[in-house]
Length: 172
Image (cartoon, rainbow, N blue to C red; front, side, top):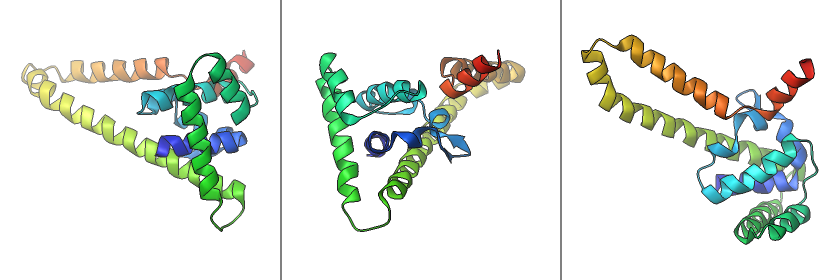
C-alpha cells in the first residue's frame, strides 16, 4: 500500500520528489528503487526515479505511453491504480490537495523506511546469531567489524544518490 501511495503521489505532484521530508533528507536520497519491496513497484519507481532525478517532466499519460511502448502493461496498470488511489483519497473533504499529497507522500516514505529498518535489523540479528559465536570464539571481532564496514560501503557504492552525484559533478 505504501509503495503504491508513494508512486501515486509522485505522479500527481512530481515536484515533491526533491523536497526534504524524510529524516532530513530529500526523498530521492531517502528512498531508492532498491528500497521498495514489491519487484513491480520497484521497477515502476525506478522509471519515475530516473526521470525525476534527471529533472525530466513526469505525467501519468507520458509514463503510460512509454510503458506501453516497452510492453510493460503490468507496470502501466500499477501506475494507473496508484494514481487512482491517490485521486480517490483526494476526493474526501479536507485541506489543499498539494498539502494532502505531501502528507500522504511523507507517510508512505516513513512506512517504507520503517519496513526497511525492520528488515535490516532482522537480517542483522539472523546473521549475528549464526556468525557471531563462531567469529567471537575465534577472537575475530575486528574481522567482523571490517566485514560489516565493507558491506555498508558496497551498499552505498551500489546505491549512489543522483542528487549527490550531480552535486559532485557540478563541483568538478
